[in-house]
Structure formats: C-alpha cells, structure tokens
Image (tube, rainbow, N blue to C red; front, side):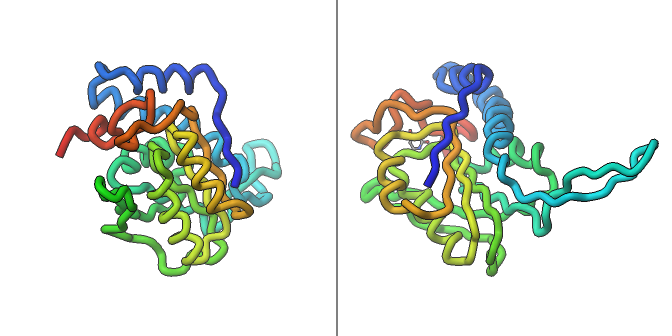
Length: 210
Ligand code: URA
C-alpha cells in the first residue's frame, strides 16, 4: 500500500477554507469538487493508457488514449458523492458505481447498506472516493469488497486521514495494490473517532444534517 500526500499550495489553501467552521455548505461543496480535481490529477498518474493515432489539421500524430474499459469510480455514499463531480470533470469517460457504507456509531464497524457495481471487476482499475479516512474501517471494507470482485488495483482519494486509520489500513493491506491519495494527514482521532483538527462531519457539511 502506498500513501501520497499531495503537496501543492492550492490544495493546502482550499483545504484551509474547508476546515473553517464558518464555510457554508454551498462553498464547501464547490471547494470539495475543486480539491478533488487537484487530487485526482495526481491520483491518475498511472491510469492505463495506450498509444493512438490522431489526424491533426496538418498531419497524423501519435497521442494517448485511455484503455477500455475505462477506470471505475466508486464514491462511498453519502459524503463521497460530494467528490464525484470533481473526479468526473477530469475523467469524464470513467464508469461510475456506488457503495453505500456507514459506520455504526457505537461499534464503529462499517456496514454496507447499498451497492451498485458491476458483478465482475476482473482486472479493473478502481478509484474510490471517500473524504475522511478516520479509523479506516469503511475504506478497508470497500477495498476488500472490490478486490473480491476482481479489481486489479484500487486508488482511494480522500481529503484527510488520521495516522491511526492509515496505520490500521497499512497493516491489513500491506503488499496489496492500493494507493491512498490525500490532501493532509492530520494529528489524531478524538474519542468519538473524529479527525483532529479535521473539518468536522464531511457529510453534514456537504449536505446538512439529515
Ligand atoms: N467522518 C467525518 O465526516 N469526519 C471525521 O472527522 C471522521 C469521520
């Protein structure tokens, strides 16, 4: 498992505004999309491509096309949905599947409550969207699920991670073809498993409390 923290002043700036408790939901949504596009630029460095010929108005040139089937993008509902537009803006031909996962606030275990994915993911390149890597429980279950269906490699795009969650994932997924791409690794988890300093509940900040 590889971890990549994207070091760019615009990433740091947008994340700072997201952290601000006074940032409104509409601005939070917009900034999340923009931030994900910047993270996705780094996360797709190893996207599968092939050489193609293209006719320019002047002559034939050799260029690059995305290999089919194109990557599968999987936002984890609910908060991952707020990241989808930022990802598909960069890879508009990606296929999109959905995983609905939530954590039981008492046991902190991840439960899957919805799934809309191709049955067979053999050899597929998958990008998972989930803003907050806190305990790592949700991502661990999602990644295991995707590998069970045959995925070849899984790249997770997150806004923030806690060191505890990253360590737990690393232990479980060492040697697996998994990359975690992040804007920041924060200080710690608090006793309610929120990331500190974090940005609060990402789903609530994107969509309001429901
Ligand atoms: N999920 C969130 O939305 N925020 C956290 O800090 C941890 C998990």
